[in-house]
Length: 430
Image (cartoon, rainbow, N blue to C red; front, side, top):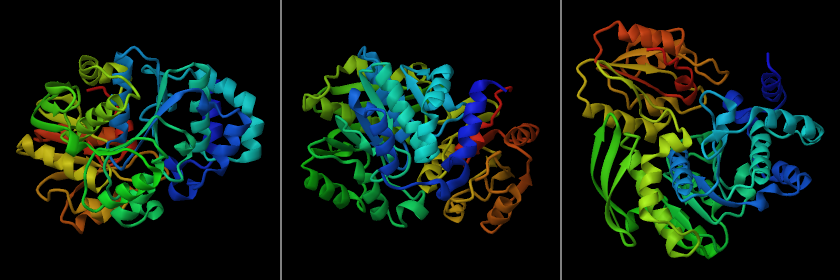
């Protein structure tokens, strides 16, 4: 075991880790992160930042904005969570993952602080990202929230602008069991006199965002009021759509990500760029915005979003794991008109499983499996719950065994979804 692996394993063992333990690892409030930050000299004040929250799409939107700023010649930090394959994916600068030796040195230097404050794994990772971005002297840092926003550890930053994607049902045990309650938590990132752009205009949440923006005297925009998109075309290479804005008029946008849900993400990011540009906060140029979108995969290495591994049969994975995410994924599957659809499904136990399962088609074949994660719902339990919704299939020990089994059937379309952690364990050997 390398020294890096020893450090990460120690952090997993000693600190409450949400992606492994769920709600009991969640530490609401900013006390710990404020204490950590004060001990390190408030590193988040050393760089310009942009803050992103939302239920679905915040990861994609974060990567799009980072790529756009990179194309404008800036040195851009990007903090997101969770990771797919390696912990180092959470902290990047211009697409390059944080150096493992830096993580080791940071741990060795500040372990006494860790022992005295007892932060969560997420809080420790946030302060690590802030310190790394400070030392590396980034021009901008794109900071994605973990859960919610109001009490999220990232919410000590004073960003140039804020962005909220969509509001859907996820983490109701922490954020609340209605869209208005969840929106209230996400709206907590809205700061005084700081522009806020909302990616999707949803009737249940409009008033929540307007009230918070008014309270903070923040310039509020809804992307759908500012930016029109039309004629999306989906291909194996990605997506192309026509866009019209007040600032840049009509233009074509190409994206390497083909998910239907990316239409809303792209509209939101374009509207955000227009807002920040109009207010004189960050100057943007259309050709560089377009280059940032089309070059996002190479610039930032975003993975797991409608990721196509092969055709004939189609094998596609997506990290969608809640009601709003899964519903859009299944809508896109229909466009392929599969004759025999196989869905490899694994979920975590603390989700509203029944709310998601009711969305899945009854005429598909299912392979129920689980990720090697303490939060994972046992495959046999998932199969039992799915059967109550008319979904039938077989058990598989892991995601790769499930894929191999599916490939030996007559399926012309294989979808792997339900959990970020499940998608993370796909071995790309086919």
